[in-house]
Image (tube, rainbow, N blue to C red; front, top):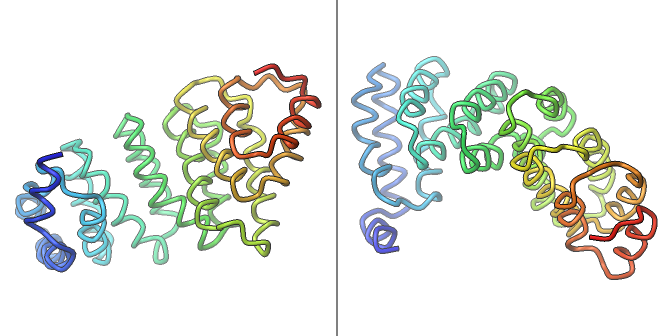
Length: 254
């Protein structure tokens, strides 16, 4: 924790914005090595993600070609904080290039090849995409559900978790919540545990904010061979009565 406190003292939000602008200028001048040299100290320290998000947002506002070349440079170094900068930059690109940002996100999830890379990218790119335009984002994510890469499949659940967290259970968004449950149905029998944890996370957060919908949906999954962890995560926030209903319908003994 010491490094975190030191970095907090060294940099505040305004300074992170200024550093992001300086890096962005170099990126736009096609000087990725010099830009990375400015960024590297912040990645070497335990810089809070909220500050790295601000740096990434400044970088992501720039021209696509130069920015994406720089993001590839950051990805090659494979630092945890680097995935935050990359993800925040891609989030800035969603409005201008949604399809491209989606495709690049998938490529970086594969490149990261670790759970936190999938989670960092999922909460910053496809998650916000679901909030901004559910239909378009679901079209992007549809092939990810059966992707050969387990981290890509995990990212689908992380994105749904983000949407559910942002929804705050608003009744006006219930139809979208139902659409997301329908979308996740083909993944309910996922077997690979890293992917199960992501999908289960999405179901868990949906259950927190839309418990009636999730209880009814889970009852419909009776007879399906989902892993016990998937069921447990999905049931987490349901009431005792709802859990008893689902367990009885699905004949669960978890």
